Structure formats: structure tokens, C-alpha cells
Length: 208
Image: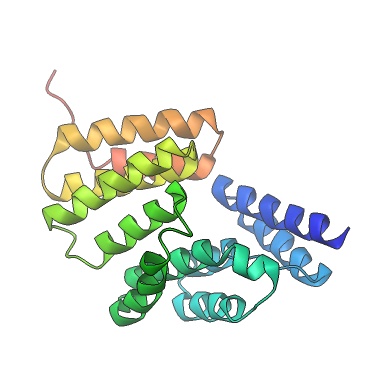
């Protein structure tokens, strides 16, 4: 039926985006829309990563206005992604608005993935050098790991590695990069491997 087919294209688009195959992701999201389904929050995340935060948030707001079973069933995940995108885009007041509903409905949405996105959002609302931001990202990494979502856990590991590098913590950065690389190879994600390689180049070579 249209539900199964549309959601299948949405999920396949998410997987393509995680692998770094952006053209395939966009094609699958477009097909999901054409069938009459919705490609969120994955399409919004992709738009944000392409430097289009306003388009990403507008797309999520359109879906959040829906009142079908599907919209209500996924509302917590949609709100959490919107909050994270708004925080990373520097729209703190908008992020707090999304967060208020997510955190008020914590009993309805106890999933580790939603809690991880909330932790990431809270981290994004703090200065990057704030130790509390690092603690929140560590929590997010733990939650993604507990949910067995290797891509997301590795993504946060690379964010932590960048934070450690900025603080001069070479050992901490190398540990996170190595763990992210392990996950990236396990799920065969060229995208994560490329991002890890870029960070690895910033490590100070060890003395012979």
C-alpha cells in the first residue's frame, strides 16, 4: 500500500544520506513525497546539512501542523530534530520552543533517540568550550549507543573529537575518532570515514 511504499522510500533515503549518497537520498525523499508520504525528519536534516536551515525548519513545521495518526505518532522525533537544527542554526529561542513541548511530553516520548537529540540540542545552546556541553554530548553518545544506532553515535563521537581537539586533548580526540572509524567500517559509511579522516589529519603526529 501507499503507506508501506512511501515509508520505505523515506527510510531508504535516510540510509543513503548516512552513507553520503546525497543524490540517492534526495531521489528517495522526492519519491516518498510524490507517493503522498512524508520524508521527515530525514529530508530536513539533509537540507540543514546543505546549509539551508530555514528551509529545513519550514519543512518540519509543515509536518508538525499535521494531525493524522502518523504526524502525532512521530511528533516527538520531529520536534527533537527541529530543536537540534534550530540550536545549531543559532536560533536559540526557536529551539527552546520546540524543546519545551518535547520535555513537557517526556512521558509520551521516552525513547533514547529523542532523549539523545534533546541532549544534543542543549549542548548546541551552550558555548562549544563549556564543559557542560561536552557532558551533554557524552550523554547523547551513550543514548545513541544504547539505542544501537551506530551512525548517530559515531556522528556524535566525531563532534566530541572536534571539541577535544579544540581543547588540546589529543588523546581524547584520537579515542573518539578511532571508535567512530570502527563504527563507520561496520556500517559501511564512506561519509563517516571521510569525516573521521579529516579530523585525524588534525592530530599531532606521535613522536617516534
